[in-house]
Image 1 (tube, rainbow, N blue to C red):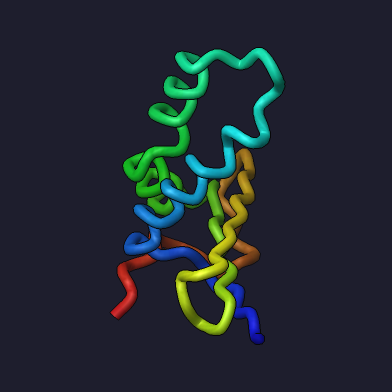
Image 2 (spheres, rainbow, N blue to C red):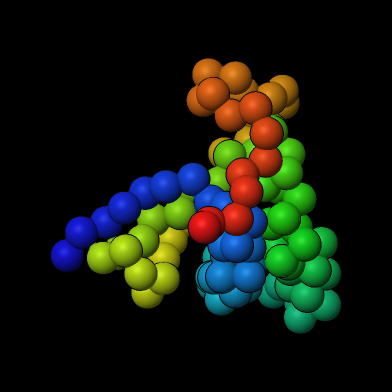
Length: 97
């Protein structure tokens, strides 16, 4: 089994949103209401949210894939107050070809 970690691309947004939805509810404290969950998911973890993160140079999303497939996909988002030039990223990533 091998794992590849790569920058996320726009085409990853639907899978990232689905993964975020499936895992976010597990990380919420007891007593979090359904309305609070739905609001947070809609505002911060929906497909359009990930598309915005990918277009914003202050957000750097990484995807980890097992054996080069979407199965076992994981993600991480790193945010900074200003665009990070140390990564060499100067624009939003384009879809995978």
